[in-house]
Amino acid sequence: MNSSQIKWSTLSQIKSILVKKWNSGIFLREYIEPSDLFPFRIPLRGPGSGDLSSQFDLARSWVQQFLNIDTKQLFEIKWKQVNNRILGQNQLPLAVIFHSRENLLRYINKESDFKKFIQSSQDILNVFPELKEWVLKHPFALIENPSDVNRLIRITKWMKATPRPGIYIRQLSLPDIDTKFIEKHKKLLTEWFDIILDSSVIDETATGVKGFERRYGFLEKPVQIRFRILDKSCYIKGLSDLTIRADEFCSLNPDIDTIFVTENDINGLAFPMVRRSIILFGRGYGFEYLENAHWFHNKRILYWGDIDTHGFVILSQFRKLFPSVKSFLMDRDTLLAYRQYWVKEEKPSEAMPENLTSEEYSLYNCLRSNLFGESVRLEQEFIPFDRICKLCDEILNINSAVEVNADT
Image 1: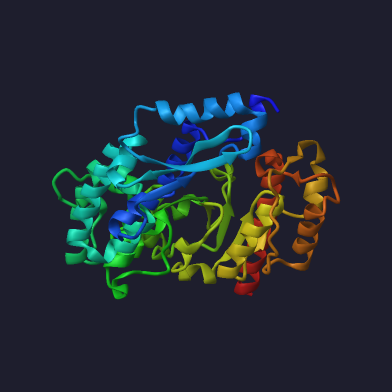
Image 2: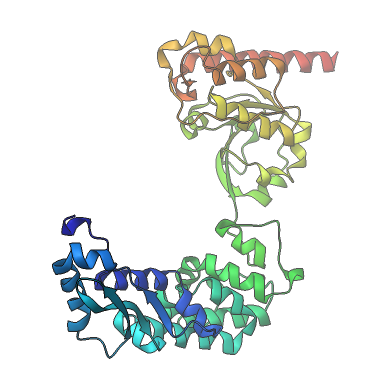
C-alpha cells in the first residue's frame, strides 16, 4: 500500500468537514436555538494495529502531524492507546474536540461572518420575533446582506402600519430606501410580509416577484395596449395609432365592426386599411388585461398568430375569453403554401388547448406530432403582403353584403 492509498484523516480534511458543517447552517441555527452541539467532536480515521506493523513510517508521520500542530489551543486532541505485539504500546489520535463555538469559528475563519449573523438576527428578532423560523431557515441571508437588514426592517414596520397602501412603490418616502432597493429585495420582503401581515390584507392570487404590487396593495404599472384604427372616418381626434392604458381601452367602445389581433408589431403597422375596423397589437400569452373589454362581445374578432404550437395555444387562451374569435391565415392551406418560409420552432408546446375548432386542433396535432417535419413553424411576417390585402378585400365584401341585407 502506498501513501496515495492511505485514507487516514488529515488536518485539511478536518477543516473541510467543519466548513461543510458551517455551510449547512448548523452553527448559526445553534446560536438561535442552543443545543448540546458543543463540545463538538470529530472522530479521526487512522491506522489500526496491523497498519502500525506494515506501514509504521507512514503511521508515525501521520501521528506527528497532530503532535506538531500550532493550533492545539483551539481544540483538544483525544488519544487512545493501541497495543502492538511487535511495537508495544502506541498512542494514536482518536478525535478532535472543539469545546467552544468561538474556537471552532476561529479555526475555520468564520468569526466575522458569525458576528454579522448575531447582529442581524438580533436586530430582526427584537422587532419581529415571529420571524424566528425564517431566520433559522435563511441564516446566510443575514450574512450576505448585513447592511440591508435595518432598511428591510424599516420597510416591514411601515408595511405593517400601512397595509395595502394604494400607492406606487416610487411614492414610498423612507430615508435611504428607493425603488431599486425594494425591487432587489422583493423575494425576501414577500417572505417577511407573508409572515408579518394579516392574511386579510394579502391578495393570495398574486404570486411571485411580478405579483408583488398586487399582492400587497401597491399600485401596479398600468398595462399599455397599442392599436391602430384602420378606417380614417373612425380616427380619434385625428389619431390612428394609439397606446393607452388597458383600463381606458376596455372602456373605449369605438364605433367599429371588426377587431383584428396580430402578435407581430410590424404586421400591425403594415396591416391594410379596412372599413370600420381596428387592429390590436397582441402581447402573447395572457389576456387578463382585456377581461373588462365587454364591447368586444359585440364585434367581429379575427385573430392572426404564427402557425406553430404556441400560436394555437395563444389562440385557445384568447377564445376562452371571447368565444366568437375566428382565426385567419392559420390554416393548413396557408402553411403548405409557404413551405419555403418554414423554420424550426424552439420548445414546442405540450399543452392540450381546449378552445380550438376541429380544423385548428387537427393542424395543431399535426404540428405537435411532426407530420410535416420536425417542429415546423411558419411565422406571420413571412406571409406575402398581397395575400393579406386579398383577405381584407374579402372581409370588406362580406361586411358590405351584411349591410346590404340589413338595409333590405
